[in-house]
Length: 93
Image (cartoon, rainbow, N blue to C red; front, side):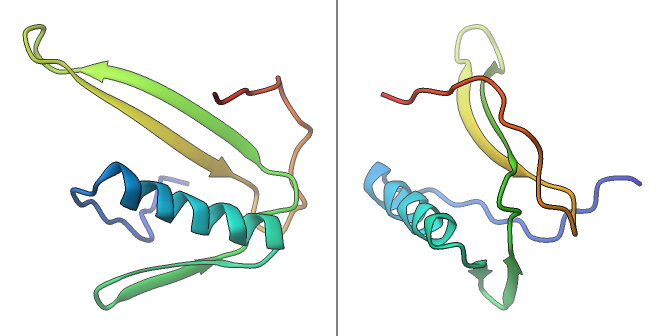
């Protein structure tokens, strides 16, 4: 099945605002509840599995004289399943 984008938003935010968004996601995950995302008139609620794949990726792209870096955090799970086994230990400092 090809990828289907169900929700997407992109905006310029301060580090503090981004941290607030990530804290809200973390609190929802820790509480075991759904995560509801809303931007304008669009919204979606997702309920990640108890065990999900967590991917962290840092990329550099663009021209050599002005490369752009990004960091991506991704949760992935099979709909209707409880999740997969844990992988290697991730440390964030």
